[in-house]
Length: 216
Image (cartoon, rainbow, N blue to C red; front, side, top):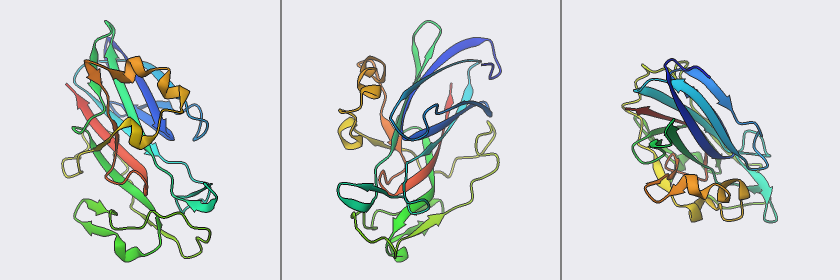
């Protein structure tokens, strides 16, 4: 897929649960398996460095608009999320991985059983004080949404005030039972280019996260 350039790159992506990938503002890939089951994706494209990467990550939910699912005996269980990516050039050299240098901003946080727990200070949307407890009755739950900028994926979009991505371990995300990840650990967990799982600061409650990075 031509994203504007002559060099060939390959992106390897595993998302919990869904992603959309933009390169230089062009939509190149949409997760082929929306939400479940888990899968890895390989996207080959043409570009010239530097180029911009923009990824939308979305967590799965059964209770639409409430960021929760039926799990572990509870009707309202807030599941976790996460995204990992590796970009290689035509020679097989890694040119980018997901890590804390990416920018990541949440645009949908749920479930909230007490809206006062959410603290918004400028670009910081902090839900760390909010409950992540699974419950059987979610009738009091609500959600927080922020308008997604129309050009968030464009190369010239100013993400300088977005927080840096938070990194999470494989164990925290829970991939040991997911063949779609474990079968490609040689790519995602390569010793000389180990990619981190990234997300916004709250892996559980933040359900729609936009992530950006310029590959020099």
